[in-house]
Length: 221
Image (cartoon, rainbow, N blue to C red; front, side, top):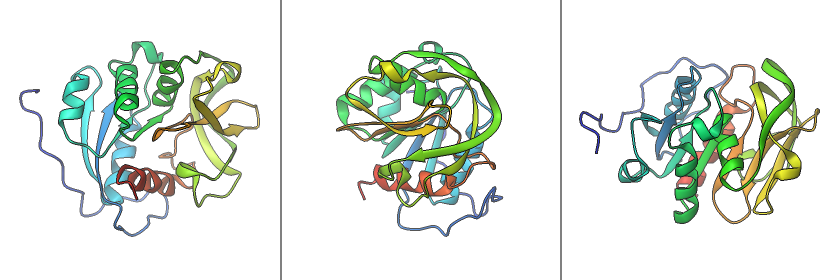
């Protein structure tokens, strides 16, 4: 275990809403957020806490996979970050471990790419860089996207994508953008989900609902 690791953080009494914030419900769960050194990570944490989750944050190169599982989280979230998934600390190893144990996992941006790469997909340059840009995202309405309109507006901050032709059979492409880039993946049989866009961005619609759906998934609801 890591010396000096903080106890599970209590949800904040009030967090400044980036969008209309729902009331806390029965979906509270323990969520471990693995931070890939991204400024958006704390936005994600605020969203999760606003939804009543207990959140622990650890840097991707400060913990081992064993540590991550020892924390007893109901679900694990792998954050956005710079670089490629192969360079993102324990991100890919954590995806593999969650696959072996059926632990619920959500990957956002770099975390989403880590899911694709772990299962054998290729991560390649996007048709064009998309940093701070919005676009409509169409989806299948299942699991993470339950209750969301299709399309909805999502904010994108990335220059890499999962190559559509390389997505393995074990993964379903469940969300795409108008430029045909993969914006969502889910495993066919495991509670592993990824989104390329940033649901926690003020420019994205439905961010609270998506993270609420992940909390519910983590609790087995």
